Length: 117
Image (cartoon, rainbow, N blue to C red):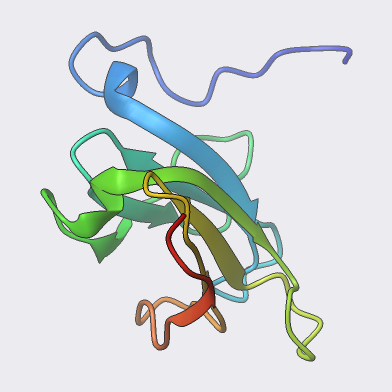
C-alpha cells in the first residue's frame, strides 16, 4: 500500500453501521462495484467505484431484510459465467447460499449450497 484515498468523509451516522464490504462486477462499469451489507440487513451496491468519490447507491435488499442474518458475504465468479457477479452468503445458522448473476436489477435466484447446521 502506497497511499490512502478517502472517498467519503468521516461519518458517525452512516459508515459505522456498514457490517461487511466486498466488491464485484455487478453493473458492467469499468471498475468494480462496492457491495455493502449494513447492520440492519439493508444491502447496497455502489456501482463503478473510483477514488473520486462514492457513486449513487443501488439497493439490493431493504432494511430489516433477512440479510441481517448474513454472517459472511463474498463476491466472485462462482458459476460458468466468468464475470465476478455472483454472491456467496454464509448465514448465521450455518447454511450457505449462492446468488448467481447479480446485477443492477438485483438478486435473481438463490441456490442453497449447504443446509443449516
